[in-house]
Length: 438
Image (cartoon, rainbow, N blue to C red; front, side):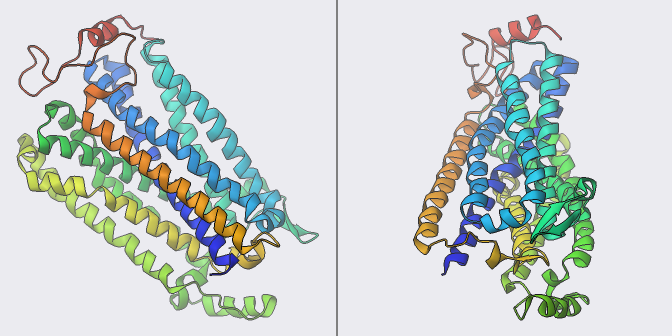
């Protein structure tokens, strides 16, 4: 491999690693909003316990995901300064806003939500979570606004060999970015759904003593999952419609405009292979297959929810647990298709990837940073999933988030609650009854 290949591999590893965190974060926060809103309205302890348990897993994933995001953004200055110099005036604007929205506003609001348990009323505490979710989705939009410019440059003009932003509205309304944003949010909802389904199915299959709790979670996520899968597919079709017009070479000979555009590129930039590598087309195919299996598993499982028959179907519960990897496989493949399909362009039709790399970058420097950053991302992923598995297996009694000072862990079977159905502790009952509503 040469310097360019190593630099591309490094960014691919860090971007995909970060995306694994982001997809779960975006999916889980939507469910948390529903859970806590139900608690704020009804005051029922079961909704509070749901928010605490799933919220703790959300916080773990969010906290470790920040590290991969920082590593990814470092590379724009270290490895891809050619891109920064060429489109920094345009590309940097939405990324700067995203940094303010995500690293400052979202993190601050999330911190208030984490440490606000038992210190503020249900209504105010729930409003904080709504704001966390809104800033999370705003962060996605601004990241995709920057990425959408690389796919379909708009709202700029060339001055002294660099792109300069002249129309911020056009940048925000870029159809390539807007269509990708809603598609990714829908796909993240699928990821969040299957995460809740998988954890719930594991507990139900193993009969861990929390059947009532995880059956309630299963009822929340499983029925809406097919709708989310269909929505993701529909929005993906819309995105492809824009992409075929804006980046036709991504689809190879399937696009009628590709040949004419290649001729234009050749006249302007010289001979080159303006079609992406073949594995980008494979990634497009791989993206679709897991979605079909996700739909199949969910549709088969839903009828068994009648009279809780699903709890007695251990094979089906095992399949629902194993299906957790499917949304990740689909999302990673889709991201590979979107990014690799743009090659050989860093900015489609304006700047080639080989010209976007930092001038004078040595093979040893890139190899060292690849090993360091790649190892860091791998460690963060391993730690993240180890902690998620550990706290998910503990069940709602192991949730530390929202626990009142001095509050003991709840017993597996609370007195008078029936076999296998955990009840709230005395401290939880007191906290729930005495907490202010605003």
